[in-house]
Amino acid sequence: MKKNMKKNMKKRSVCLLMAMMMACSVMSGCGSSKTGGVHNTTGGTTADNGYGGQESFTLNEAPMDGSYDAGGTTAEAERSDYAYDSATNSSPAKSDSLYAHTDVYDCYPEYDYSYEPNTEEYNAIDEMGFTSVALSPLSTFSADVDTASYSNLRRMVEDGYSLEDIPDGAVRIEELLNYFNYDYAGPKKGEPFGVTTQIADCPWNANTKIAMIGLKTMDIDFSEAPASNLVFLLDVSGSMYSDDKLPLLQKSFSLLTEELTAKDKVSIVVYAGEDRVVMEGVNGSSHKEITEAINSLEAGGSTAGSAGLITAYKIAEKYFIKGGNNRVILATDGDLNVGLTTQEELENLITKEKESGVYLSVLGFGKGNIKDNKMETLADKGNGNYSYIDSLTEAKKVLVEEMGATLVTVAEDVKFQVEFNPAVVAGYRLIGYENRQLAEQDFADDTKDAGEIGAGHTVTVLYEIVTTDATATYSGTTLKYATGNELPNEEWFTVNVRYKKPGTGNSLLLSYPVDKKVYVENPSNDMQFAMAVAEFGLVVTDSSYKGDATMRSVIDRLKGIDTKSDEYKDEFCYLVRRLEKN
Image 1 (cartoon, rainbow, N blue to C red):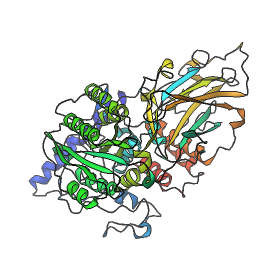
Image 2 (cartoon, rainbow, N blue to C red):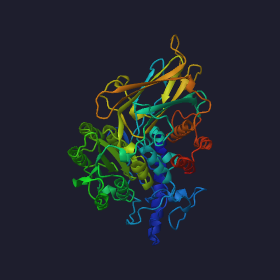
Image 3 (cartoon, rainbow, N blue to C red):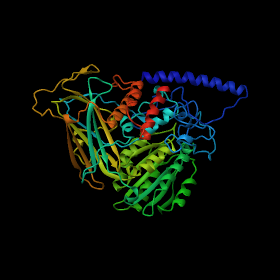
């Protein structure tokens, strides 16, 4: 609260100054124009008055300029190894790389959004502290493969946000971790995923260790995947007018369309003041027809999202493919203001509709009006995943490169329950997954909803643990050793995973004991990178448990990790440096 009060005071001062400058400009006959480039938010963008749905934060002050950078072109020019040509808005030196972002919006008219209010909403996150193994040896939570928080954070960093400007609740550390791919072991025959575990010393706390649990499903060639019945549910309301919303949405779905084949079916439903069926049951190979329908859409009107959802599910059921991939793909900024609008109402609607066997994926677009809380709820309750599209590069990653993971589910209701051995572990703290916590009894209850995992997905889980041979104090509480037990001290903990095969009602259980053999002094490249991402998340969220972590320590740690072979990990290194500079 104190942090937000300081930011609000700072913003009011800057806004007053800007108003005075604008007045002077008008008096002198000077005008302003949007020149493109990076959106530098010098006055912060958050306030914690105004709550939407369940506990969430509403941001109600506008960034200082509304220019949109299609992929960070100006920001990327600051990289010493990046050859940026401002005249062509491209990078000849890295034309095929992640950093070669060209402006994909040249055909759309300029529009000044500089003074529109910022009404983004995020669910509050109640950070988990350390738990005594003697009191509670079981840690239970749902799997999560969403990545929206990372790409949304990237957008903020490239827009010039400082640490203080990043909204409370916008950063979910597990989504930062799960944005990246890791070289985990693949699944054994007959199992949906492989499990990799490792334990190493904690980089930001000398008194603790980090335990990593990694899951990986089998990659598939989408051309060999079951037939898909896809319903594109597209928000064309007035709030979708800006370049980073409907125009980017159209480019993104055109990329997806090119990947479909004759075995697939495509329907398009749009909604604004009311919902409308644009096409239904069209052959997936009709790329030109589908793309022309998408590109013909225009934005305007209010947002009757719940009506659109109902219609989309009805069409998905009409063309349902038994044994296929039946899915609604919702693309929106999340601002539903007609019909069912609260998180609770939407949750009830989706919980009912998913019984049809149709999955729901959610793609978030735009800035200044994002309802992240609603979009996360829709994806979680709709047996789908939630991604945020901030550029055409991200659209390609989600809808082309990771098409199997995005659209083909291989395991439903995936739950973790880690049982710690009190003979070895005195206390533990799960890093992230605050919104995914389950009660101990929910683990074996097949009626309790959990996360879905797609083909080619990796899931990364990190615990900070205190062993019984070390005493540590956290927030004034000293963890006590567990004594008087006869458990084998070779095992540190056991990872239990429950999941359902798609379309079935009964879960299966897999167990993986983890012993002292997995402790290493020199952790793998994957684990080092995952710890660096987690450390970054602790700094960005100003965690009570960040210990010695700083932005500089993250940067120094990344220098010792090979990220050059992975363009997304390499980009992360750039973002950390950029945020420190901001």
